[in-house]
Image (cartoon, rainbow, N blue to C red; front, top):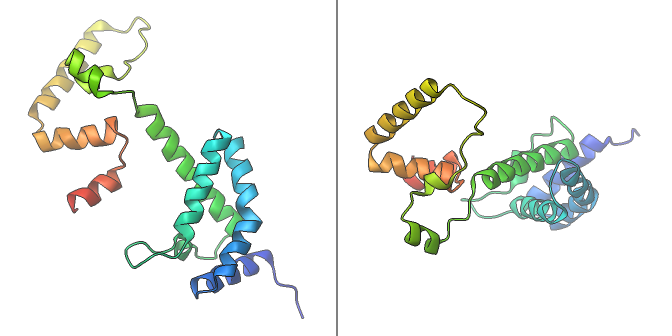
Length: 176
């Protein structure tokens, strides 16, 4: 009798879990939890960020309802489960770091005091002696473009670029 490869074992564990055997998820978690955590830290996450991302990944693997199926249902078995989980976790880390880069401290007291537009609080480019005519042209074009936007379009831009909500989430909110 031939030995079962790790890829086949992973596929069997996922299928067992999806068919209702909850012990299979505990076994998967035992196999890959530490690897996921250490890999995320190696890829730039702080230990607490890695812990949160891995915990969120495992919670998304739990079988939910019809609206929110298990993340493991997307696993096709064409690659190793470890590689697939690492890819999912890394993509979540990248999304988290992107959102983190756009988030600013926009406390209501600051906005009420200053009356500034939150977009004005985002950092501008470094001043490395740019071509002022080009910068003025770009500024004028952007102001014209924003001036032509409807209030709904401006709201969508703010949600995505200021508050870090993904375009997919905005689409769901808008019923698209």
